[in-house]
Amino acid sequence: MAITRIQPLSSHLHANPADPIPEKQVYTVWMKSLVFNGHGCTIYGPDGRVAYRVDNYACRRRREVYVMDSGGKTLIKLLKKNFGVFKTWAGYSYCNGPAGLEQEDSKPWFSVHKSRQFLKKEGLYSCRAMVTICISGKVYKIDGVSHKPEYRRISDPDGKVVAEIKRKQTASGVVLGEDVLNLTVSPTADRLLVIGLVIVCGLLDHCI
Image 1 (cartoon, rainbow, N blue to C red):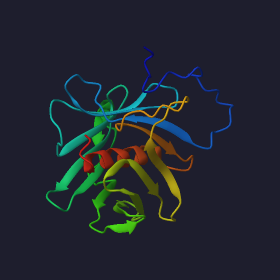
Image 2: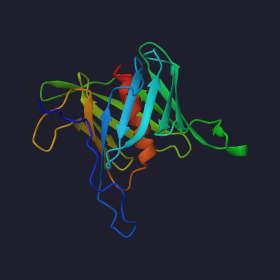
Image 3: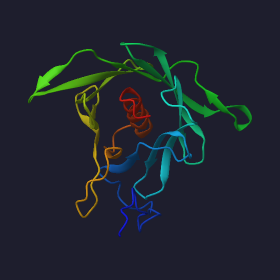
Image 4: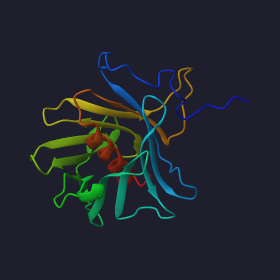
């Protein structure tokens, strides 16, 4: 029996710097941890290799979540600020501090608040999360259907869609599981910000 890979390796693993920048980048998001018996998320790059990951060791729905690169370097810390109905997550960026040690910014980079407003459209109730970039005050929006976490759309302050999440299909048309998604990111988007927002969406949907 043939086995469908979550994200097969590309035949073009090393891009030529002289090649034109693609119009968009497509990632594969797998709502599973690479750690045995762990909870988390794994994001594969267009080359088929692990690009980002979240690993919650033997614990789900933690209040503190770390987004790492493939080598385990921390890029973003996501912190749940309050609990109950009003769910807010704050994202803190990491950089290299003295002696090459990872250092967390003292102020949040962005915050995500899940709106209570539900909009009826085509018989479905959609939900919206508001994203505030704390440094600049810009507001992004995440739209989707409340009971269909496999679809999300991220818009910038000008209303332009910068990223879209959909259920993944293989080239032959095979639809993969609900926990395997395609993430399409526009070339103008801040990719690390988009990755952070995708992880928050998984946390809000209780997938991580």
